Image (cartoon, rainbow, N blue to C red; front, side, top):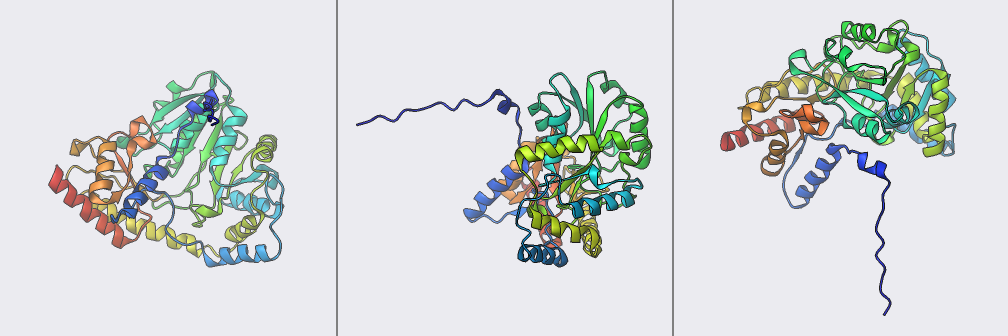
Length: 396
């Protein structure tokens, strides 16, 4: 009888530096509990609970019927790039041309490609913490050093402009900004952005400005560092369709950047994905140029849900929650419970049937917090509040 040979899997060293996005892990765990018969309220995953607007779906279906099922340019279809350039020009008050736009399958490739293109071993990249976990993961994967800037609750989870200068040095290659911010819902004001730009000054430092939630602001207006005089050529703007138009499954985002960098980002697209699906891009043209009423409808619904959920959490023993000004997350302080973030998140899932994320899923400075997504119905949000309140009464 022939004996099977066991071969050891020898991964590249760089794989040890790769992180993950805990939201999908918790989602899988929650679904496993559901398969066992447990009722779970899903407040863990960061995607709109609305369907893609009908006019966008129809544009995608029509594109399929018309044969938009073949390869397209790596940088994206010219008509979509032009539509995006016109929209960014209007919304950010700057002149953008289509050769400064690269369309990619989702927002994450803009993060990944930017870091692969710019960050070398020995370089430093400043990023928000707590923050979207893929920032730190991709910085480390690229071989650079991840330098966190702490977002503090007492500063409304904004960038501390007093701390930022101490983190910048000759090795700083890139600074990542995110506003509105995941997981805190913090929003950088125009004054905040201008202060950050002033601190960077004339240094040859690029900024990756993640503005994926730019259309989901509840108080104030969105302002991009790309709009600051002298910063357009030093900014890579990340935006997309997933959050604004409830198109998470369509996988389509884009980066706006200086043309010479766009050429290199396009080469990374060629070497990885070839191109973004053509029929989704045709739907994207309709999203950008078509009826925008669905965007405002979702924003108002998220604001209503935010208000209800924040008020409810502030009535729960051990919870204290500020009111986020953007995105669709709330980020309560749970230090009053005496529980660690991970332990409490696990208990709420397994014992109360409420799926949320530990603040530590977004970095070490997320300890003492939980993240809840309010992308769920008011009925389910109120039921989640009842379950959380009941659990705290029985366990604290």
